Length: 339
Image (cartoon, rainbow, N blue to C red; front, side, top):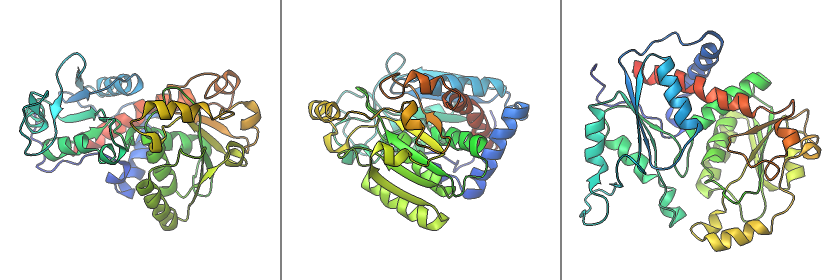
């Protein structure tokens, strides 16, 4: 195995990439999709560590590395290893038998890149939003660490989303994107929305985030969003109705996310969600946009979040968006493994 740099580049959030790196990455993603992989990674290995479930992320990462000529070591905490301690200086008399510091050192000697999907503890948003686990891995690993979705960020989805937006709209500056909350009994953290919001603003898009009261995004994320909008000539507004959010938009991005006010309280969260009606994207809703396309990160609950007619209709980009996970991750792996 070739030696790794002493300070590898990690991807914990999209802003870890410079504007030039992000531009290069998007161009490489589009080129690889058109022409196939042109940068073999024979002999390179990616370690994939899942502390919670995955379908598209796991499959697309394995396929990406295989198509590049490399291989993967795929491990799941539910079946292949155990809980890990991430607190520095802790007395390890609890359940975890191993510290991330030791696991990261060992894994760094086996693989060329580590991709990790941590599992938020789910007890406090103030704690989970710090993304301690993924940052601890990055601090101790001697190879690049890729965040495969933490509590706060999902940079891989944002890369695929930007690629899909480029394909659908061309130049993104000034284009209108509606991110709309949808109802689901299994809402996700706002990681996808946070990463998409910042990515779109960094491209100069006009973004509206529609959601019911009580489903506001993280205050720190919104503060950064306001700064990005100012820096890039973009705009962001939040909290309007579904119809107001969609009206005039060229892309409608549907996503269910949990209420941070009720974080760690499933009973209150379920009660709050039960009071929300009409938050589904159907043909009538989509028609409010400007020939709007639909995007959704999946998994999607049909006829609850989005109607069959829209998901299976000619303006749906959901399968293209999912496919682009493969191409954008291939490009990312080439960049990171190139060093």
